[in-house]
Amino acid sequence: MEFSDQALVIHVGKFKEADLWVRFLSAKRGLFTAFAFGGSRSRRRFCGCLDILNQVSVRVSRPKNGGAFLNLQEGSLLAGPQRLRKDIDRLGLAINCLKFIQSFEISAESAPDAHAAACGLLELLENASTPPPLLPLFFRLRLSAGQGFAPRLDSCRICGRKADSLPRWTFNPSLGGIACPACSPSDGQSMRLSAPSVQILRQVSASLPQAWGELAVSADLRRECGEAIDAFIHYHVGVAWGKNGFQRI
Image 1 (spheres, rainbow, N blue to C red):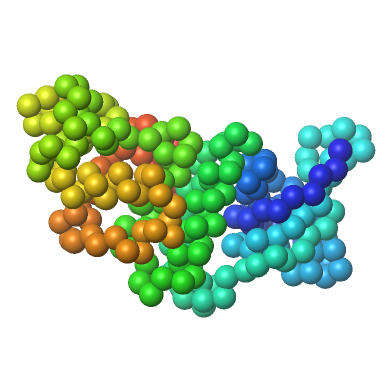
Image 2: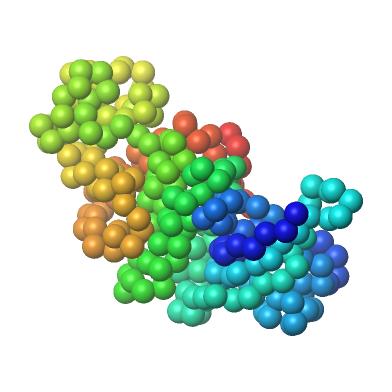
């Protein structure tokens, strides 16, 4: 079997002196890994395209013996960030988000949304004058929503009261969304969330990263949104940031 595709390089590792394994995110296939034999030396087959954050066109095949591993036959560079690679802070934000992508087994069904979110993230980091302070958390919320882990932020999860009807709400990860003060469970998990914070979380979970550069988020809103997203990801996705990346909890 052989196929050609366009994909984003999200991780590159070395397993022999000149051989690489490369993890891609494709809008057609989701996450897949292919081995590039001679990838760290070959200029003819890979043209220096096997760097993280690159958009590439690839040709991939399976071994003739029917093995499960994919072999990267050739690749060519379509696009790569310039400003992002030279700014260590922006690069760190990008890598944090790409590591979160690998927390999921992104299938072909949910691949278009994940790929669009990842490409939108790189576009924002490449072009924005100042990236949003909560960018990694915003990205975790957005990617999770596209993978079926979307919090309910339009109304109270218990009584159904609409989100725009009150100035204050609570967010409860076990409920998977917001509750009005009268319905808020007394389980110790609920946290305060103002109406502007609810609106920001709704916008982030329903839009691509390119739209986040215009969000006005004060210090208080950052705290509220950050705590809510972090609690939701811990509870529903089951991962937390560790020393070497995201780990299952």
